[in-house]
Length: 489
Image (cartoon, rainbow, N blue to C red):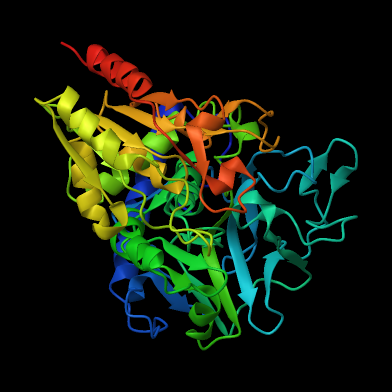
């Protein structure tokens, strides 16, 4: 955390004196930082090659040098208490419910100078030595709280995964910040756990990994040398391999690491973090979240643009001719054992023939997205003006469409009230999220009754999970014509 250190002076000095003094301090700090950068031999050496020596130190050797890609929000730092120059204390700042200790699932925090104790397997929060306890939280009902877990059974101050499935909180230590047998990490670190990322690209992109991007922007803190620490084991699925190759590098130059493996790579009892960001893992898809997504449009768009730019495409590219893509959802890990499909378009061939016949001057193709590398998916989507897709995870590549494109997304018929929808309604499964992708125009192909869907297997009962859509050509043409009209010069 960058600080400007100034000496306390009397208040009767003229203004030009303070300007002169500030310049002198800044020059001295610059010379001091340069002198430190000349002595780098005693840094702790990690077995993980992606961590550069300048970003780690062991024992009492420190560095003031940060990557030019590191941007922290400027904060006040003034020497007043005259504490030991080598003594650190923990601090934190949060956004979210700061007056309700129980509202931990949506809280996002940045912690400074915390340490992980490999023996206790806990994160320690250090108060200033010989300092009286100060409140850390102001709860509307419980009053001033002096501990992260007062009056509660769960160790919950933030959640490390969306939905609040992974409570986390540090423990306040009665000891001082370690002075030996510790490793200090300078770069920004994030601790999180994915929820559905191993089986669903949409959840992985827009919730699990997307939340890291949103959190850094919300807290005004960015580091291209960020280390993402995954709390548990990372499954070696095809989706995780996709994230590693095409998505995570949009966040950081470093690979994601498994937390325990990472901690074991340091030969010290304590691993200390200059800056640790935790919480803020957003659930963006449930219908009750639609109001929560108000104002998040810029976060979603920024994350979409980061991914596109990393994969060497222009996020502002606009195609000059029409192209229609129809999604063939031919693969899903959620397909019922007694079925060959899951939330598909039943009459896909009829749809393809109809569009090619009705719009002969517009190029049209049917795509099985899982057969195409993710960077090629982005390229195809950026050249698409109309995307026709079933609902579900397969529709969540929609944000990669260019500015002004149209997406026709299949609804599902509600035969059992759930997820905030009532029986008989035409439900837009990802509407709570897609409605906040403001650069794309969404049209929902609505489902009105039994003639509009077909169960995927004989024992199917829930139309949300067990049925596919039968598309009516007249209604589809109405939506395509509307899209073409709105894209007309």
